[in-house]
Length: 449
Image (tube, rainbow, N blue to C red; front, side, top):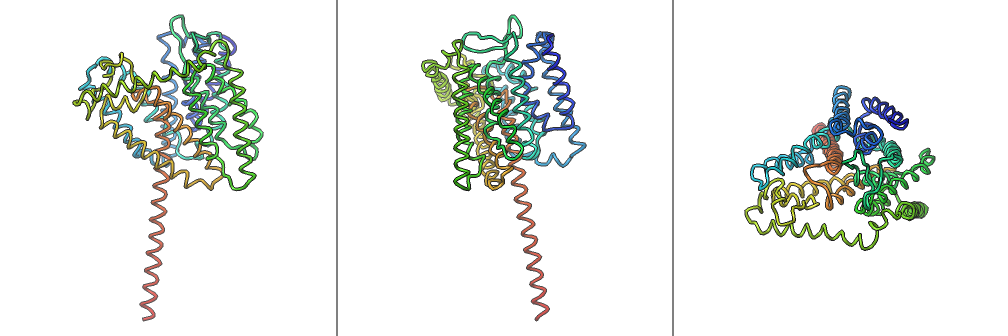
């Protein structure tokens, strides 16, 4: 165990203690825990052994669960809108996936996909969204996430176990297993999204140089690990949401926004020049990027196979059934297509309904806070991360390992449902006032008569 490992363990212990009384800080740790786990396993062999590897996962889950329980007794009102339409739809999707085990054409694969991922589903679907109850709380996570994630990424880069295998940067935690290929790149790109969609007014201007450096390192990790889809999706999200995070009321605001975008363009260019090296240059070549069409071919093959089985149109071929399809036993790498194959039109309908509601909530939050200089960038950040993880869900991952996509969807759903409820309450109060005024006018008319 090195001095780095001891210092990191001490820092993690302090962070865990703080998280118990600061739920929003616990949310940061949950988001960063894949990197933190990789660092601990890299520096402390005890946690890298096969038998002890789940311990960090259990500790993070226990921390999050304990924090939620503590918060329930301290702030019961913060659980308002914990149950909302998005949560109901996500739970229905998960239950349908388990029910689809009864008609799957590959029960062994279906069981391995669902039960092995159940603990993660519990953490990301039922526990983690309860750590954030308001937009200001989400706003508190921005600077801590940027610097905690970046610090962990730097520690990971300095690890002697991190090396290139082919064109990918991996963390060789043992002689037989490497971890953290794309997840580290994904969280690195999330860092630069956080940096770009955070506004730096007042005292935060002093933080911007360090935040820009953190964004450079985060994007660099995405480039270094060869996370092509993550990097491209992150850059797209930044250029779409950057103006949304800032009110443009004058020519000065317009110029400031343009300068800000230019700064991030410079960061991107320098990151490409610095982090695309001889080891991973081939992965970022035009020839390599053009091979991404292979995922599209898998999607087409999967849909064609589903369409050739009319009996599977309504409820699909069952969970894990892609192993029996004519797709070389490769899962679709696409949540939408995976749902269509496994749980049919019914499952896809639930998912599309969820996306529709998320779009409505997004529009509602933006319209509500577009004139609020403090909350507008927080809304833009939430929408940006949701867009980022949705784009990634179209090229990787599985609905059986919900992880970050559903965590952020549920957070948006909860905050959006809160705004709907507030709007309805305000409307009801206005109606009550109008009725009282009408009654007073009627009484006055009777008195005059």
